[in-house]
Image (cartoon, rainbow, N blue to C red):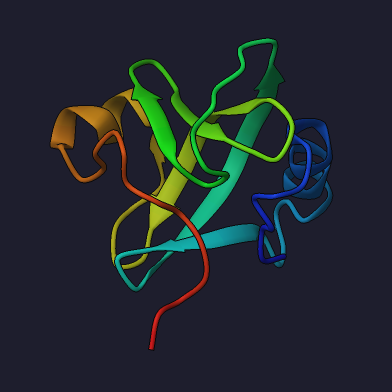
Length: 104
């Protein structure tokens, strides 16, 4: 279920649906596992590198290899499952941060 952010947003969204509830689609940020439970592709485009958080609001918008993925429900390792807007209020994720493979 590890997400390859160079893939198209529509393909990543299908991966998230297909791996819900188990084993779950996931990525890493700052060495912590980030499970993604609900997301949708958007028509927005970005020139950011795949896996980059472009915007945080009601959803967490991440650049992919083709399009953007709007994440609406996720869980950071060691934390409870939250809606993206609630996680955004906590300041745990920042615009410009990169999602990807575990480092180290």
